Amino acid sequence: MNSGMKKLLFFIVILGISYVAYQYMLKPANKNLSENKKRVEAKYEKLAELERATSAANDLHKQLGELEEAIKFFESKLPSTSEIHKVLEQVTVIAQKQGLKPKTIKTLEKKNNSGYIEQPLKMELQGNFNSFYSFLLELEKLPRIMKIRNLELQKVRDAQGEVSTNFIVSIFFQNNKG
Image 1 (cartoon, rainbow, N blue to C red):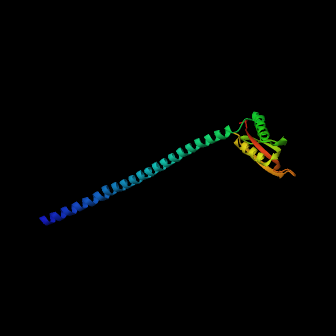
Image 2 (cartoon, rainbow, N blue to C red):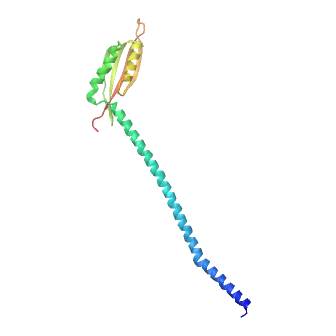
């Protein structure tokens, strides 16, 4: 065998070894590397998703705290049912202080709700319109949750600025059952 033939045979053997090395070593290693890279990327994505969920959970925790504070605030505005006479007395005193004459104050059937009780009072007052307006402003300043419904104002005949009012004021109380 001459030297040219040896070189050719050596070149073919090197090429064969390179091909075998590529097919049986490099190609599987590249495939394995690619799969591992995909798994790592999937884990990074799950980690990012977990971070977003944690952030959302922290936001929800903060919102829950704010809602609990709001509930405590509104519950503080709801007296217990044993205080209904005090609130009724406050409303009556305000009406008299403003110079209004209570014609009737009648309690209506109370409405039991899951978290609170609503006690409607039907009131008829008579007096000066400005006094009635001041009465409403004073009611608004009370540290209780109240609601005025069915407000009717009628001018009193032959009396300048005098009105007769008919309305329902609902006073809200804590439901002590739960």
